[in-house]
Image 1 (tube, helix red, strand yellow):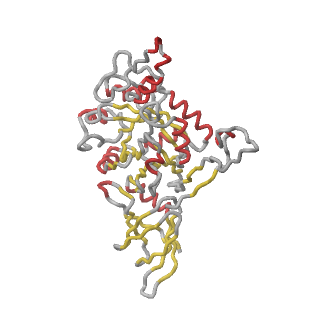
Image 2 (tube, one colour):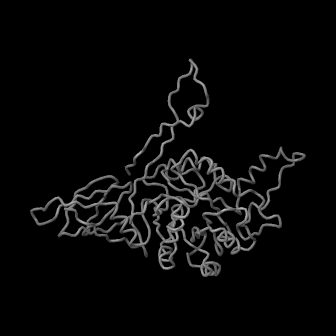
Image 3 (cartoon, helix red, strand yellow):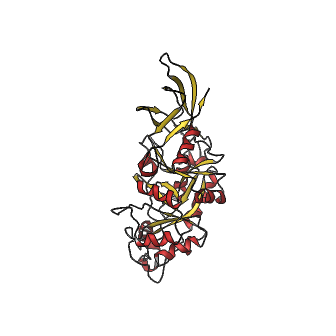
Length: 394
């Protein structure tokens, strides 16, 4: 996949270029560590901007492997416009490890007792509840994001309960993560909703034998507590959930649920990290919430674009143009297809497969005056691929 890279020649202080802060006569720098942002070019649809977002990510303040600052830098380098910080409320493995590391700071060097760091699989927190500051990782991320003005940070948290019958839920646009936890599974979701948060049902097929709704799911859906569902999580795609989202008018999310560095997962792939494409007026909380609640999202995963059929068609029509060139001796119509986006498209016309790479123009021959293509790396309900007509520009 062709990608555009913009080298940002801002070194953020001399400390980023070397472990040394001074240059000496006997020292010569052989290279500079310059952050590079990957630019993802995508079109507007119906006058709305398309923003790239990862709405499910973890740091070492729960069970991730990177700091909030590194997660922010990584998202910026990956070309994201929006990153949601959604560390687990009930699962904080790294906290347990750090308390062991800080043993020497405790009275009599006996160490600190982890308090309710593993309550996500049917176990309830004891009377002490959650005592850690669950807002801290977002505070650190927002401080780090001041150096990356293109990136917007959404405050959130993951409510992580027994996976088979209850499940996990990302609360987005929270105001106080410390006020979410409850021993009652549904009440925790209600606590987040009371803050004005939107609720995503995460990885609905994880550790389960189907995506069918349990009694708990039916309860919280019926109560109107669920606003969206992950149609993909990491490499896992849940085709049935696309229909659920369309029928129940829920926004669709594709998320990394990243714990390791994204370079470890996507660095050798020929596609971008998983992301949700959000069509909004701007990146304000009001506009983003409106877009999500209006189901103005598509999922991107593994080079596939997934979502509601009409929005997929509009996105493809905004991405690709068909220019009339002439006719062939046999009466065919010669057309140039131009893809002006960072995404590759895989098309089928009259049974013939056509690859249309990012930022490329290719010639095709069609019959008649209608340029109608099936887009094989777009997916809507029931694992169907949309068939889209492009306006023929003469």
